Length: 263
Image (cartoon, rainbow, N blue to C red):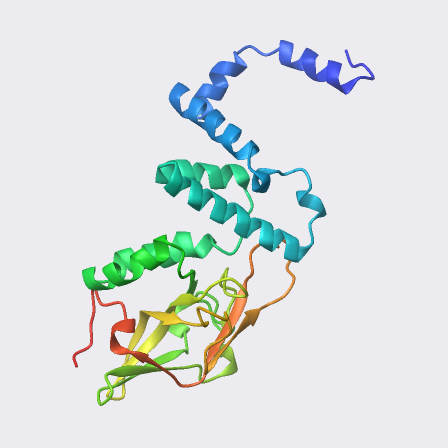
């Protein structure tokens, strides 16, 4: 039987269920404790001004980007101030569901430093990452190559006399294209570039590269970086482009846990 009242129709359909919806909720959320914790996190989020979802679909692209940053920073601060676990923070980000400029800082920049950096490099970069004194992204994809890693063209040529690398984008297709957070947000990037020394190409390696001034947020000399413009979705994420014109970086910019270059 169907009525002209959707609320009544929904209630009748629920009454036909052969299982307990509360039990299903417990199962889907991984148990009673997980469900209760989820409810607590929802309550915490609902009390934050940046946790309000009512006007989300009326936001402009710029407003959505700013809202995503406020949410990410808000959760980050709550995690530190209220001693929330990484799991709690991840759950809150999922509940907020507003991707923004911090996604690759959390999802790729920090994990890459932890997995590929030496202990000394981790000690240098991780405090800055965790205090948000720098914001990172992950620059691998190129305009002409997508995620085809062996086809990347950006180069890092080692100069033994100065103990430094020269980072360069030799062609238009070498332009880094699409990294989230690159367009407006980040100050640094994990850059995948071809390591070249003494004329030999050793393939792609990871480098930590500063892109923007920490005071003015303007691009550093030799760095061309910006936003790729409107997309069909994920408007809060500032996907960007990146090019280098013979930018010199120190030897220890290369993450050296598993490979290194002799001085």
